[in-house]
Structure formats: C-alpha cells, structure tokens
Length: 152
Length: 287
View 1 (cartoon, rainbow over the protein chains, first blue to last red):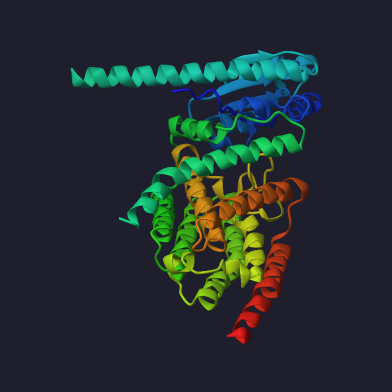
View 2: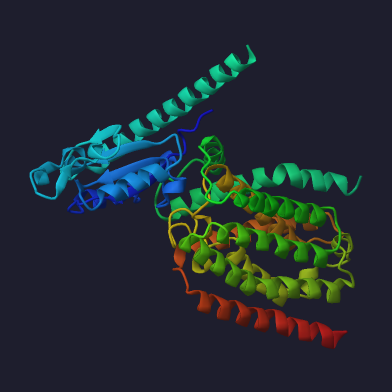
C-alpha cells in the first residue's frame, strides 16, 4: 500500500540558533510549499511520521528527544536538519553539548548546511518518505511471512 | 425501498464525497495562499496511511468510544437520509458528540481534555441554531418528517431565511473552520497541540476523520432541506447553494483569525437569536 504520499512532520528544535528552524518553516510556506507533497506539520508525536530535528543535543534536551521519538508510532523516520543536528557543528566542543541527534536516537537522513537551505530540507523529506514507504513494506512482508509460517 | 436507496448511498458515498470535498478545500485554500497545494485525493491518502501505522492507545476504552461516535453519527445520517423525524436526527447527533467528548477526556492528557472542553462549548454554541431550524421547519411545513419537508410546495427557505442564516453561521463551527476552530484546528494551524485529537493516532484518527466526513455530509444534507421542494429542479439549486456555502466557509477560514471561545459563544448566540429568533417570531405571528 502506498503510504509515502502522506508524510506528516514533527519538528523539534534542539539547541539551535533558530536559523534551521526558520528554513524548516520556510519550506512549508507558499514559496517552497512542501504541502504539495502531502506534508503536514503536525506538532503531535502520536500523529507524526517524520521527526525533523534541528540543533545539537545537550544534556537537558536529550531525554525530551528520546521521549518524542518513543511516542511516535512505527514506521517512523528521523531527519537531522543542519550541521548542528548532524554532528554538533560549531558547538561540538561546548561543555553542555553531547553532539548530533544520533547520540540519543537513530538518525536516518542527514541534511547538512548552516543553515540548511529549504531545497535541501525538502530533498531530505523526499528521501525520508521513500524510507518511510520502504519500512512499511518491509513490515508488511515480515507480517506476511509470519502468517505463512503459522499456516504451515 | 424508497428509503433504502438514499440510505445506502449515504452509507457508501458520504465518506468519499466528504474526502473529495476536503481535498478541494485544501486545494482551494492553497490557491488562496498562492501555493500549489496537495492533490485532491490527499485526505484519502492520509486516511490510508493512518490505517497502516502502529496503534498506540493511552486508554483502551478510547477505541470503543470513538467507534461509538462513528456508528452513532452514521446511524444519524442514515435516519436523516431515510427520511425520518428531523428532531430525532438532531437529538441522536448530540449523543454522538458526547461520545467524542468522552473519547478525548478519557486519555487524561491536559491538551486533549482542554480540547474536549472547548468541543463542549462549541456544541453549546451551535446547538440552539440547529434545534431552532428544526422548529422553523415544523412551523413552515407543519411536519418534522424529512420526506414531508422535501415534498412541500415551496422551498422552506422562502419562509425561513433567518433560520438559514443562523444555520450557515453555525456550520462554520461544525466544520471546524478558522474563527471557531479552538477545539481542534485543521491541518495548517495548531491549537493546544492538536486539541481534541491530541491523543488519537493511527486507526483512531482515521475513525475520527471518516466520522467528520459523514457528519459534514449530514449537515450539508440538512442545509439542502432548506432548498428542496416538490420540483426536481430544486435539487440542482440545493447543490449550487451547498457548493456556494462551502466556498464561503473556505474563504472565511482563510481570511479570519481564531476567536476565543467566549466570543464564539456570544457571537453565535447573538446571530442565532437575531436571525433565527426574529424569524421564529414572524412565523408565529403569520400563523
């Protein structure tokens, strides 16, 4: 079943300078209009499919990011937007920064840039929705094979 | 047989029509904001996706309550399209709204609970206008029977324009359009995370969405009742009026900011009293 036409985003700002956040929102505004791909910005982890993280992970927001990830129903995809979310960026050596988003949750797509441009963010979303579809298909195949094994 | 066909049509076609109308809604909204917008079938894609997601429920009884909401709304619609008593239809519809309230409150989430309380206020804001419309139909045509109202000689709107204005006004609340969307805002604007649907994900949200489509088609059906009479051409007029009001709702949605619930309650009751109440008095004096 084709589910990649409806990827809903959850956008979380770690400890970024807000540059990437503005670009994430810009990619949803009339100029770039990510909604033409079926993208919705939900803000509710229970309804989200793709977690967009901007900014590095620090000691305070690490449990928050982990909880948001856990609250999202499967299949789900994580996209790290901006160099801070990828590796920690210029803040990497700071005492409170643990590093990129992949220090606490598994990140699937990395969108580098400081700030990441809307074009590359949308490209990241498109890659994420392919992965979203792939995961759903893999899950279906697994369920089918289990059912087949049970019947034998 | 005469009752079965429209009932079956409603049962099968209402979610499809509702989805396509919402698709057009999103497309037209996008064009109003100079965007390309999603495909027309986007709401259907969304529901299919929600169906495939892992089900996480905070409180198991939410499933049952949402299913009751869906079934009661569908039952109400079937009663209406089978041509039974209009007053009964509207009462059963309020019961289904109560199930929605409980399904949101049961999770215990503060956002969801606040959304549910606002939903109750919304129910309170639109209910008088809807009930008054039923009274208006009785005074105009002498019956609460939907078939009877449909087979009158002249359209009901001729004698009850005030009720029509009040009904279209509260339709904005019922369709969760912008000035009155504090309980659960539609996709681009958020309110209290997702208001009444905060704790609904996957299949439960799909149930909610499908129920909304059934409900909107039912409300538009009640609106058509104002126009339809013996003449078959009045059906065409009803469709045109429905499409025009739908466009008007989209326009209002895109040009107005959200209101506080106090203002919503005041405004909707004032409009109901002024338009519906004055019309009611006039009808009673004429009789």
